[in-house]
Amino acid sequence: MELSMFNVNHGFAEAVARGLRSGFLGPEDYRRLGSSDTLEDMRSALEETDYGTFLQDEPSPLLVSTISKKCYEKLADEFRYLKAQTVEPLTTFMDFIAREKMIDNVCMIIQGALNNKAPVELQEKVHPLGVFEGMKVIMSESFDVQGGFDDVYRIFLVDTPIGPYFEEYLKEADREKDEMARAGIETSQVGGILTKQDLEIMKATLKKAWLEDFHGFCESQGGTTAEVMGHMLKMEADFRVLLVTLNALNTDLSTESKLQDRNALYPSFGYLYPEGTKELRKVWNETTVRAALEPYSKYLSLFDQVKQFYESETGSSADMSAKGFQSIEDLIYAENVHMYEMAFEQQYHFGVFYAWVKLREQEIRNIRWIANMVILNTKDHIDDTIVPIFQPRL
Image 1 (cartoon, rainbow, N blue to C red):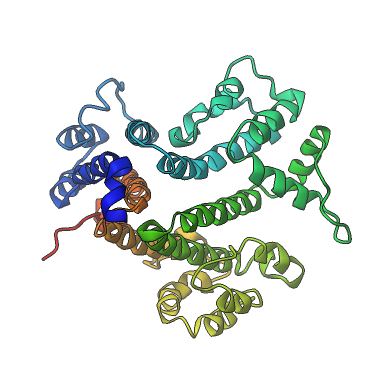
Image 2: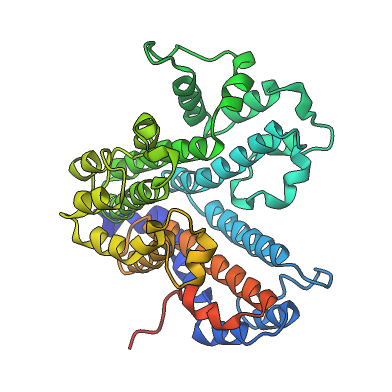
């Protein structure tokens, strides 16, 4: 059925996405970027790639943040073009991809509001993929953050696709231990609830809700989309469990009183779910993590590669990285790139759109890393961290 019907509605959009695959930087492009002595050299090197003259209007001296921002803007432009070619249910699928970035933007604006920073001051940090209609109001010069969360609540929780995730989160956050979740939250209560919450935990909770919602949508599509996207999202859910577990080690979230907060961040699907997740809910140190991961050889091997990074309670992440230890994030980036590349090997599914966006985000991380190494004059570390995409297969 897919063979005969998929291309009628989605064939052109898929062809565009597969065409965009050819625009990823190759080994020669990375070599040129890595041999740059200044950010101006990087500008020239990028002009010879598919990025073209996207930096030509930027004044000197160039900043790393400027390069990164313009790369994300180019990605957002291509994403919007791609989305314009789609019909349902692919349009909703593309909306789901953008929702993850909406959560990042909303959390950043709330953080700014709690610190009495005007949203317009945060314009530089906004992810262009996660821009939605209500943000134009919040980002205007006249928007007064001092007026409390009433307007923020109305715009974020009522006028955006991520509103239901926020609504659920606020209900949970405001629930007393011995009380059922309330039927609804009054606008006036939002400020009090948000000021008490850890913003990073809030972001992780919202992304968990988004991931579960996205997985449910992909499963409902059936066919190759459910198979390919189901695998990618299950892996992402498992990686999220590992990230939360390992990053909580040696912090308050590993203490008995806070375990419930940590465990609430675990998605309710994935290859680890339910047996592996059940065991990981009980862990509090490296030994118990290793025991819980014993039946899962792939994840156990990842943990063994990074455990030295987490074994030191006193060493900072920067110190550990300098010693050559890798964090779980570094390994997950590399694992994910291979997984997203494989999505292009199958046809007639929506996974190529998700994989393309994720691979482009990794490419932008690579460019930003190279730019930072050029600025710090430590170019010998470039090859340690960048994750090449669509390497030539020998």
